[in-house]
Image (cartoon, rainbow, N blue to C red; front, side):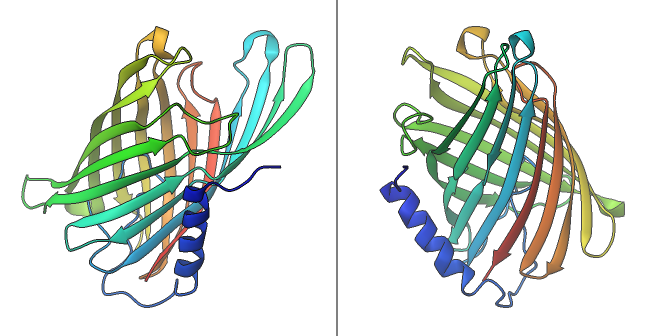
Length: 268
């Protein structure tokens, strides 16, 4: 049996509170940080709360000797406006269920709560002309999950987002960053982060995107680089509710072969 940690219990309580007023009208249309890897440069606004939750299925058949795995998780992000230019963030992949089959055909299943991250986003600059809209994100992953999947200590990361809007409904987002992690031996190492996304408005309330995501750029001894090619769409159901989906294809053996997510976001 798995028990809630203090961070996870607090997150679930906050989500329950937010859900009770999910469909309250807002002054501006919702702008989310999902489903693409590149975050938005905007914040939710003073005294606003936004919840972005989803289901994520990852499949991988690149294991040695024909080993295969399938992982289902529920990535969720809570965003709380702390002023006109800042927001507080709590993020987790929630409870994950992993099904695996090794080279001999032996099957196994593991269920565990993933770590929680806390963070801050700063909307540093508005866009205009050739200048991008800029956001800065500082996060810290905490060793808060179930023991089987828990990371080691506090692992900080820093990302900077630049977004450009173009005629014809096109947009471009770039997100470089750096992070600190620990390997299996407990040694700390640094890794790079990079995302590039091109978006297109497909209708009044529908947008699509294609993206190259590198959530981890590291040496082989530190687990190597992970990379995906993503495509997806987001549908604005109202000014405060968004439904989205994305399909991701792994570009190397260190990344799951295929991932699919569907999500719901709302604010009040």
